[in-house]
Image 1 (cartoon, rainbow, N blue to C red):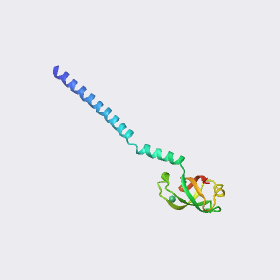
Image 2: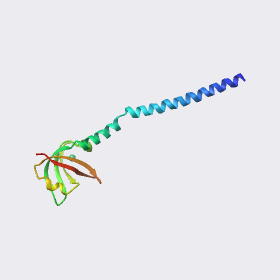
Image 3: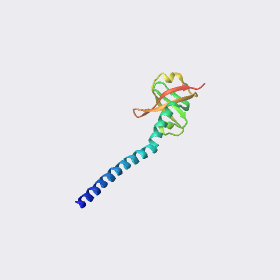
Image 4: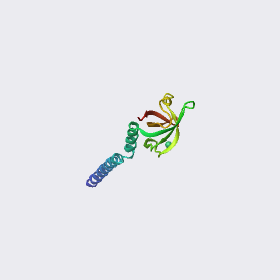
Length: 124
Ligand SMILES: [Cu+2]
């Protein structure tokens, strides 16, 4: 009888330790996710860059092609360094607002796989 009680106590302790271990593990995993800010950081960067526009200079306006060649600075949201490249524009109307040599602030995003200027502002 005493032996059975001892076994029961040990079994109970194992169960408790087991569940405690699971709880600690779950908490630990959650803690790791909480302190691992890489995903949070990425989200913060994405939202921040949506608000803060990138700087660039219009090199060419292709009204018929709906394209804009921009010499741009680093684009954090696209993980892109400074370069001169061709962008599509979200709205063809944008092409009437700029001319070659204009300094602009813009937001470029990947739309259907194509890098597209989604927001544009001419610097005076
Ligand atoms: Cu580029």
